[in-house]
Image (cartoon, rainbow, N blue to C red):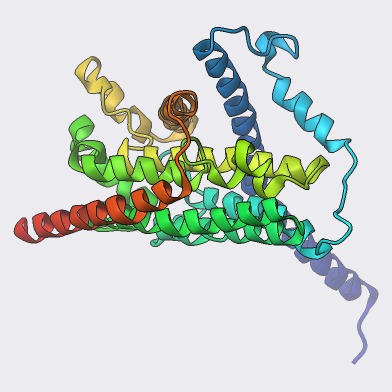
Length: 363
């Protein structure tokens, strides 16, 4: 079979077109992921600045003021400093575990952001098991901490890693039971469906009012999962030097620092989605009825309003863990485990039983 020159050129141009389409497809797939990562990074920088400013206000001192306007670039300056510091490795430790640990801690938390709805159907992956995917992925993070503690070949680091694992197991169960109660109320485990189920009844439809016991248990459990005071036993400075991050320096220490704030931000997002009505304004219909449906409107304006409402609720909620840090003293390890197993677990089970009973009676 003989092919002329024009046919060969057509075939080549077609193959080039197909390869270009594949490249464009990959680029369009990466754009939302990279946008989300950039947004999360800015969000973490804002949290660090907020924590320093609020902490300074509570302790009646000035706080950061020199790095950028109002000290907003202080976190960026700290990150840059850590980036250029020497990366030390323990001489007798397990180098592979020591290096992999921080990466596992950060990546497992970053993956949780894929199921968070920031606006009306503005979510990276709207899965029907969204909330349980978050719980499953977040349980990988303590494995990274345990690896870091063991790989450091340091008794303080190893104790910190063991504490992180024990704490995570203890408080994940009440957390999961609270999420299960919300799923029963909403008849779905999708984060988007849970927000839409709350929007049917406006402000009083928020799960905060329908699940007050679950909200308190979820709040305490999420504080423990984030290892925030009074639950920061894995990195207790007075007891364990710095816990699992004792031997770390440079960028690896920075990764742990980022992981703790990423975890705090993702917990606040899930409180907003599960209990505070997500992207729905819900209150404004008292004043301007048209605004109640504004974030359901299509287009850029409606989406922007939805994102703004979600972020406003999230950052307002962040005041609770930040103020708690300077208000409550640290618990002992036995008190921490007793609170998880003897109090929160039975209360969350009772809450689940009440929710199930109410759902059955309403049928």
